[in-house]
Structures are given as C-alpha cells and as structure tokens.
Image (cartoon, rainbow, N blue to C red; front, side):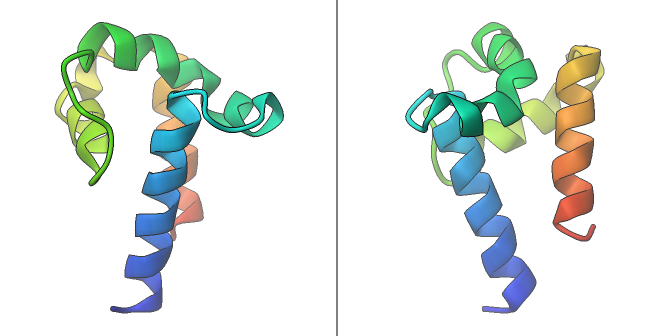
Amino acid sequence: MGKFTVAAACSLALFSVAVLGQVPPAQAQQFAYCKADIARLCHAVRPGGGRLMQCLKAHENDLTVGCAKELKGLKSRMGK
C-alpha cells in the first residue's frame, strides 16, 4: 500500500470517527459542518470503509457550503 493510500485511509477513518462524535470536541470541531449533512443525506449509511465519504460525494450538489469547504480542505490535505 502506498503512503498516499495509507494517508487517505487514515484521514477517512478519522473523519468517520469525528462525525460520530467519538473524539474530543476540539478534534471533532474540524468536521462540525458535515454532521448535519451526514444526518440529512447519509443517515442510513453505516460508518466505516469510506462509506460516509462515498455518500457525501454522491450528494456533493446537496452539501451545505460549510461541509463542501471541509471536504475540499480534506482533499487538499490528502494531496489530491
């Protein structure tokens, strides 16, 4: 597995944990804008395996501005 694949997997895992509120609030704050979008658009999606990210990507035209910016920032930090 390449280093970017591992970094992407780690970022997605952290994102899944953050949106579920299982990390300290200071760290979860980073993805606070996507919580409402996940609840609204992806409520039936089981977290893990990149499923939440896939759901958000599938609904990218329906995302709030804040969540879209958060995802864009994540994408740029992952080097894509």
